[in-house]
Image (tube, rainbow, N blue to C red; front, side, top):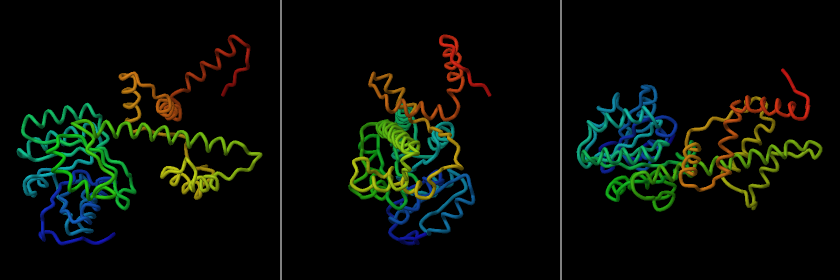
Length: 316
């Protein structure tokens, strides 16, 4: 790993807390530290805390959220990179008792935008600012930068902007103040819904190529050639081509695809708004099917075919 940009205490004008130092939070802390910020970090894992503080002198880690906040100068910017749900809710409740008027909390989880709107209102009532941040970039964000979609008031986003400029691919590109509270997470939700559809299209297309055995198509070579000038070229195709170059058969993988929840929210939102999203919905249902959730229905289909047409039934 690259070393620190400057020692702690020298020109200490950028201070940010990162709560949650896992794959995303830890790499974001590294990118911030390389950019010159001092990061006050907390994670439940002591090994994770020790590793990060050992890599950078301007990453200081603490054994609790309370210690982390107490060590920071005001006004404080506290960025949470935690799973959405109970962990985030509990941490927000704790921060509400630790922070002072004018401090800002950033929620970088894949949270439901309606929850973010609620959090913004609750925190505003006690003088705290809130920004919801949709973060895209995965494990590659540390080196390539993160795409960041922000929701919140102008003054809250202004406090966060210097840190977003360090995290993004470029200070002026790759991030956007999308609108008021909830807008960042809403935009990220739709982003992930589109991602579902793109992934499903690639998966189905390559399955078709693989199934045409008499043509002896090399899916790895096809993925590679599509990367150069094709209208379907994309970073997602780059990753697919790289994966297929290493393993074309995928024999050791189970056909089981989880979902993080944002695809579901996107489809539910489309129903509420009356906006058709058949590709995104189909991609979500394909993930459900990969887990055996349509097994009973498929059995029933077979039984009905037998009932009206006398078709043979396949049994275990």
